[in-house]
Image 1 (tube, helix red, strand yellow):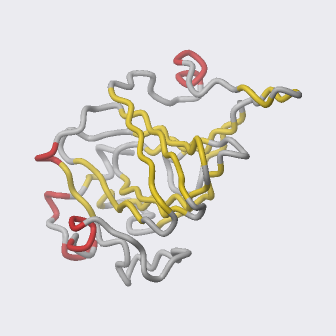
Image 2 (image 1 turned 60 degrees about the vertical axis):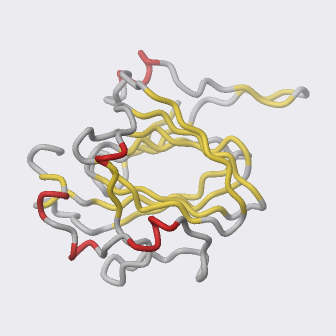
Image 3 (image 1 turned 180 degrees about the vertical axis):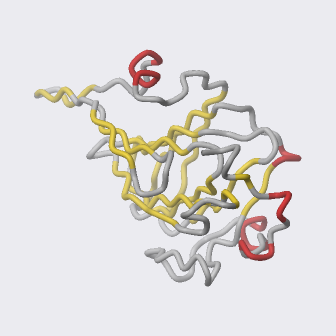
Length: 187
């Protein structure tokens, strides 16, 4: 497995070792010891799965309190995956990065607490899988507007299919300070 850090401190891109032959391919999606050796948690407590159609945009989501680290990947289809640094005091606060996750070229991303996360489906359908380090807590669910002009994410869609919640999240500048992460705590 190859692990690459991004410019946003804490984000890791994981390229698992893929074994291919005439039958198809195989790879380990998670092995606690190997991931821990790379500085990632092995204490995942909840697995989630979503199936979405082309043009669906989910995000930008996070949880506070009950913060979640997420190990994400696509098992079918292709998505444009985005993570935004929302740690007050971080040198990269409000910055974003993206990666294409494609089931044909297996890769994963580990997104630690301190980041908002979202994705947009590029294929006709996509199956998105993620492991979380904390349980989903509805009262802790938060989000940032997907098209915040100051963050300026270059989404590959102009008129996405959104949930009612994703339509009304605030811009980052309008999120109360107590609803953001502290960089010193989430370095």
